[in-house]
Length: 150
Length: 35
Image (cartoon, rainbow over all chains, first blue to last red; front, side, top):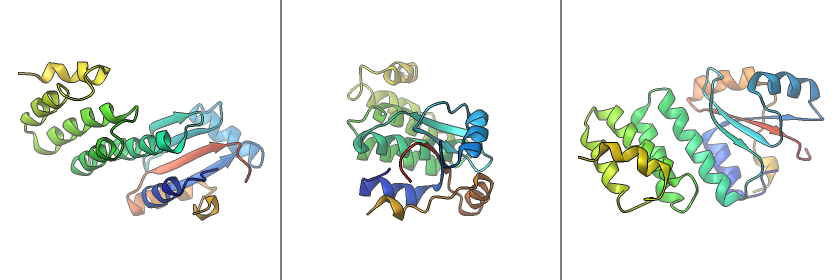
């Protein structure tokens, strides 16, 4: 169940939603579960239009944690289809709307990568590395971005 | 807004076609929640 209004709105606005139920659609659950290695519920996947997995959430999360995961998944899907400006906007939304979430640092990292991919301007990476000097310093994403420091 | 307001689809192939048309990703939910 998605009882939180923010979640239902975000899902409806940003995704084509598909649900397969472990008991009520047992055959389809088994078929798609084998295809996508979904062995537990809930497992939520973000797929691109070719059916390729772009993000995965396994296990229940409260709405305040689930929403940023959905936003991150939307952003990754845009990135993988090469829509880098849209991806940057979605990754920035993860950081701006969910700054205390587990995935905010990942959003900041990929927002920088997306801007670089959209513009071919390496200053996007340097600026992202500088942002990590004042935010999310103790994350693996800060370490990954540290190579962009000049 | 209630859960029923999400227009869940059940056919993944139809959803992938809609994803191409609407340029949105698919959210595939493997669920055990009450329907």
